[in-house]
Amino acid sequence: MIKNYCVVGTGSRGISMWAKPLVNEYQTTARLTGICDNNLGRLMFAKTELGEQIQTFTDFDKMLDSVPCDSVIVTTKDSLHDEFIIRALKRGKDVITEKPMTIDAKKCRAILAAEIETGRTVRVTFNARYVPHRTKIKELLHEGIIGEIHSVEFHWYLDTVHGADYFRRWHRKKENSGGLLVHKATHHFDLINWWLGMDPVEVAAMGSRQYYVPNRKPGHGQRCLTCNVKDNCEFYLDVSVTEFKSLYLQNENYDGYYRDQCVYSEDTDIEDSMSLIVRYENNVQMVYSLTAATSFEGWRVAFNGSKGRLEAFEPEAFIAEKNQTDLGIRRQGTIRRRLNWESTPYTGADMDSYCIRFYPLFGGGETFKIPIENGMHGGATKDCGTICFSQTCRIL
Image (cartoon, rainbow, N blue to C red; front, side):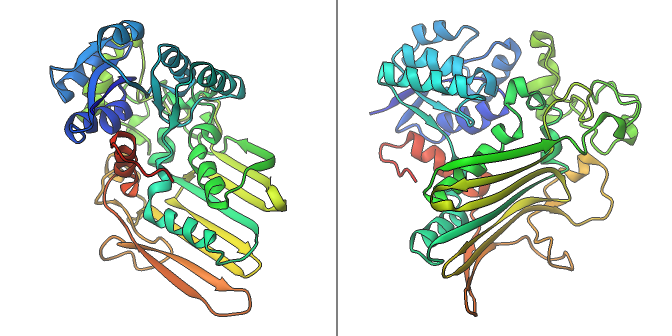
């Protein structure tokens, strides 16, 4: 039986990660019947990418009235997730939503209440679980390799390509995204809760904006396109080229959204440096940090237990060239590569595997080598799509 899906929200995530796979990869089990956005220009762009047969709408309810739909996929900005989730549930539709489900406790409770009231289901796409390296961590902990778990050290690094981008998009305002502890770290908290098989019982957090501050680039403008200091800025983004132009620049007149807002803007209110102390059941403790302006991209985690220590390290991206201050070059896959930044010299091929290391409490060590899968997010996005759209699915 083929299920019918509608997508609301046609930014890059909605088109590339959801709509395109529905049209091109899952035809035997799933059908995209409609897409909705308040930006008519982006809808027209989506039609060129997906095919003229896809119906487009600027009115959400009209879409649900006009096309067959079993499930709605929500890929709007985070602050609107609750609105479209609840409206879809009350129309008798199941929902798949991008993470985070929503941005605050009040909206979360409203979604859960609507799910109970309607009897429909909401799935949040935590695709980070499906990377083989991370699945192996879960397996080892479940097998009891370190015995009783006592504490966790978890640190996530976003570099000057990926990390900076949150400060030029709509994410830079907490009213839209909830901040990076909600929008980005929701993946990380899902991973750690899943790895541990526990829920947190007490959390203390702090954060501040340390790097992307207005006085770091005197004379900066509102956006890159018209900025007077763009020729001397390490974060200049040229939106007049490639998909930036066709998806965003050419469609600004419909909603006034600038994709290239200045990373140093005065009205940005999200943090770039965050840390947490968390207590779980059985007094398991965790320290966590997220930094959005580091020299490399990736993460590391360590679990300490009664039988030893399990460590995992995932270097996702590193720029080996010195002083690479041109963002246009820094973004390129031949420059920003999957290299172990702790190993020199930085030559040779990209990494083809990640390692997990176990150190028994009283000496010795063991290494588990996990091949890296190709594809977006280490193959996790493909797996998550298969799980969402296949007739038989494997929920981790």
